[in-house]
Length: 188
Image (cartoon, rainbow, N blue to C red; front, side, top):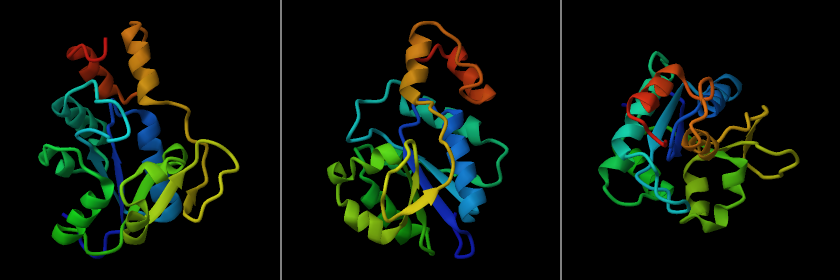
């Protein structure tokens, strides 16, 4: 799966649903910080959020459709296979044991960084990976790598709210994901 020569960025989340903001951030990390691969890892359930609305199968398939055709984006079901809540620090340790040979980056949003004290062993995680922070707001100071971009103010929650109201989300999610959501009547 991984080789020493591939500079990898880990991007975990519920992706409920995946949207263009996720893809934009991942692409920006590749172009600005030299990551050759982004490993998307959908979580079974985020310990700091409510249960996902869409099933793991639907979220995995939507993410697979969203990254289809990108040579830089890959997908792992490592957290879905565990059948229990996964913590990022444990996932990273498992990746290093099995596949990951070089130090990886770990992508989070600045909103998530503000909640790092709620994470399990965030300091250990930060010692294992290079933390890469996608800023949602100006003037946040931290000691981690920073992506210089305005992150689109799109959230999975906002997309779900629009769908519940029967509003269009076209162009907020990749076209194949949009078709998938409509086909399976997700979030409505």
